Image (tube, rainbow, N blue to C red; front, top):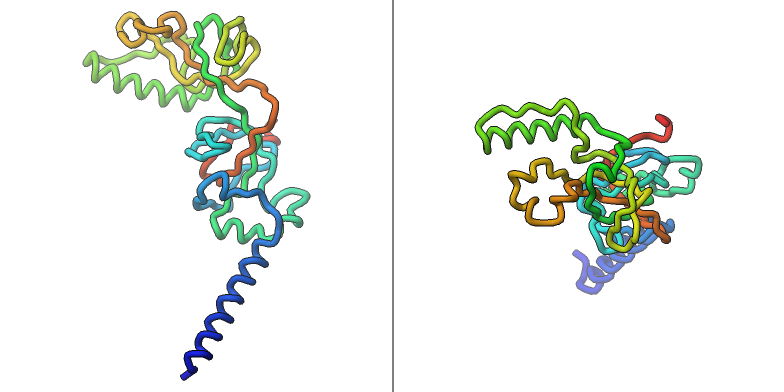
Length: 234
């Protein structure tokens, strides 16, 4: 059996080996991801460079939640022409590190009339989910079936563009800005909350994405984003 002195020396040697191994594994430069967000489990499946994505998880970027923000994938760790430079990419995946680097669009909340917006894109899956919620709500409140209107101007999840000079926080005019519909008040005559505030004349709430100086870069796992369209899909 080793003497106490030898045992201490052996344990110290093991500690030094472990520290040296950790330093070698982390020698390659990479963004300070742990300073930006907590680590979570990633899978090897992820979007590709150039994809447009939406953040679906509550991930902190520069001190605020990025959930709901959209952006463009700049880099997927371990993929692309410079993948050979991503030393240790397999370890990134195994350790649950964020592998997706994306440039995000900032958001500003605005309130609009339907005539002040034009529809750019509609996700039919979101429309179906909205209608399912409306049917359930209608039965609970009115005890009768709800019939979707033949023509619906806007629904939650629609991508829109502002076509009128409407002031929003920090901007004298939001004309030309794009964003995603967050809420639509369709029954102001029966909704006290709507009739008692500004939404009575501006029933559509939109999360706008203004063009601003300075990039907002975030690092994500594949489970924390959804692909809106692909670079190859055009």
